[in-house]
Amino acid sequence: MEKAYLVLENGDVFEGTRLGAPVDSVGELVFNTGMSGYIETLTDPSYYGQIVLFTFPTIGNYGMIPADFEGACVVRGCVMREWCDAPSNFRAEEDLDRFLKEQGVVGIAGVDTRHITKLIRESGVMNAMICAKVPENTDVLHTYRVEHAVESVSADACRVYPAEGGEKFRVTLVDYGAKRGIIQDLVSRGCTVKAVPYHTPAADILADAPDGVMLSNGPGDPAENGAAIAELRKLMGRVPVFGICLGHQLMALAQGGRTGKLKYGHRGGNQPVRDTETGKCYITSQNHGYAVLPDALPQGGVLRFTNVNDGTCEGIDYPELRAFSVQFHPEARPGPEDTAFLFDRFLDMMSK
Image 1 (cartoon, rainbow, N blue to C red):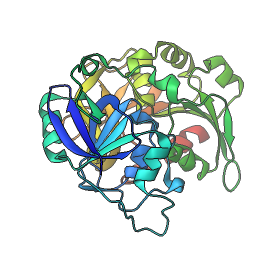
Image 2: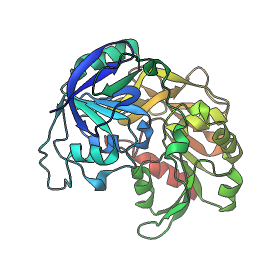
Image 3: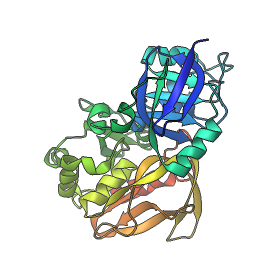
Image 4: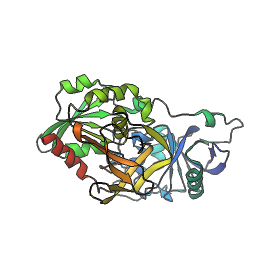
């Protein structure tokens, strides 16, 4: 097997085995703590520009299943302790190595992922490079930034997804890098979903007279999306709105809140959040590196969910605007479905 190296921004170098595409790649190194779901993770548009390190020790053991893809594969690379090259699953259509080669994505296996994860937790997210040999000049590791993220993953045209079992509501989904699971959860509840590009003007959305608007997840720094934020400011209060992940952050910015980058983010299917209204705690699926600052909440926003581990903002209600948002993923995929009821809350809001 061919050797490969993982070079970190702090100068640390780890030797391993290459899989996937025979290319060198630079990205922002983040870790995901999920015990399953590498398929959904590798096809989640929110990982644009990032190299994903899996903390679960064996990756690839159930192959690649296109029916479980959440979107396009836009990761810059993947890191794992052990790569399973002989998957066992009746649903598998190909193995991980072949999939990565088809996508032009490089992977590295055989490195100490536990040690690297500890480094990130202590020092914070940093850039990294997967390469065939360690370069003499690593300046790119200090200058790389995830840029133009949303425009790189958003849909380039409108698409309509018919409701299952008869149409109850018409929902416009603003696609900042939407996971397929969000669309599936709406469609299965009787919503006809019209997905529109991230730059669609609020006037065009309102002209369609939707029953509600869904704001999707997506990658990158939310504060860089000034034009999208300005359109949301025109939209909120005119129609029921439900925001997830990046959509949650953009809603807060549109109403005067502020966001900031977390030290190493929340990525995995085991994040506990507390409902401040009921006191109940839910285990949630998350994937984000930025958060709404709890001491700079948006005007008219009420803190609804908080992270039990670190107290960060996980959800905001906007009672006067018929809107609410959450940082976590109620559609899961992968992860627990504890908070799927939030889609029903959105339907109830549209019905009124």
